[in-house]
Image (tube, rainbow, N blue to C red; front, side, top):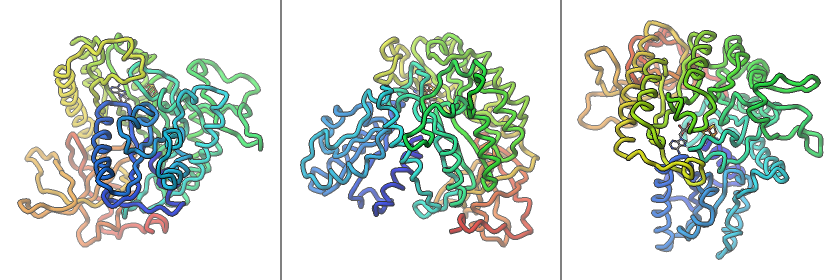
Length: 520
Ligand code: 5AD
Ligand code: SF4
């Protein structure tokens, strides 16, 4: 979600004539787009703010801004701690950023109110919610797709389908920092996807905190001009009841099918993040019937213990998660499943942790991101529970679960060896020749070969529709970069826990021509 916000900010500022620098020391405006989900991410921002702040104190003329969740959550307290910050802009106010930069540039001494655009409690007050959402909607609608970012070609784009979240998992700051769950009108989403596809995007990822809960009721929210407007999500109950007679609703399954059928130039349609509850059979069947929808499900389990899931307010049990995974694999046998786990949630016993380990052993997770619980201000968990698991225990559990996941990932990857799959080739890499005797492939990606290495071989790197990472040797006599931005059949030959390795099956023929846009 943050990456998309950065892209929208970039597009908005580019349109106003700002140019971007890879070197922060050369920039006159430095903006940090921040995340509050875990403390670690916040600490990094504080240290970078300190560094830029020192340069300002030394007399450099820099405009410094904090965007996103940290600005929203810390607000004026952050300004007091870092008085060198000129701009503070929450994720729900990004459309106001150009005006804030302009004001900060023109006023030598702006008041705190002039330097900030934070939603505060507003995002949860329905009276003003629609106005806020309309502004944000315009920001998404006005985006420009730049097929070349920082000198590299871009084939993948993201489109938001919902904003905010209504689930209130007890550990999570998102409902506070991003506000109530709001669903965008399907026509806006389809238009944005079409615009991106026309500009060269081969792969589009639909974004939302719980995408399968997307549900737009037509006629319920319109603007004065009669256009459909974003609307507040119907809540969990809506997924347990039939659509009332006479109401026209677009469900997530219908949205997927519309995009798939109406924009055939999208080679890959993906979505994140799925909520393991209420993941309807209609969605799985749509994925089965639409070949360009990727069979990839990022559906965080968070824990394998029912007791902890309840304390987390996740709204499902472990067996419900298992049933979701079983149904997905029954309808889509090739699907890959990934997710997130939190270890060291308050009161987590060895037995609770073992339940998470057991889930990672039993289910064919392609990968899992594993996080140590981090108490976040403003969440229910920080108020309700003592953070009673020591950092040592959290670290240990993190390592144990990571090791188990490595074994599971290796098994999942190994099962693909021998098959031929389509790979979207994304980049050319140089490879250290460090293939272990087991036949597995251990690759390290690097931009330059260092002196004491064997001569690096050139490889291509890409992803399957199930988000498996694949490395491929470059066919002899060909120019590797000709393959970048194409989807090619690859025969998978061996695997490791991190990736698969294979050969392009069309090595005797010239690589296909990229679209005019993709090769721009
Ligand atoms: N502590 C640790 N991990 C967290 N996540 C969200 N909030 C916290 C927290 N307070 C993790 C969850 C979520 C992912 C994006 O971040 O696993 O799925
Ligand atoms: Fe946070 Fe839960 Fe919403 Fe995900 S579903 S964003 S973890 S509150």
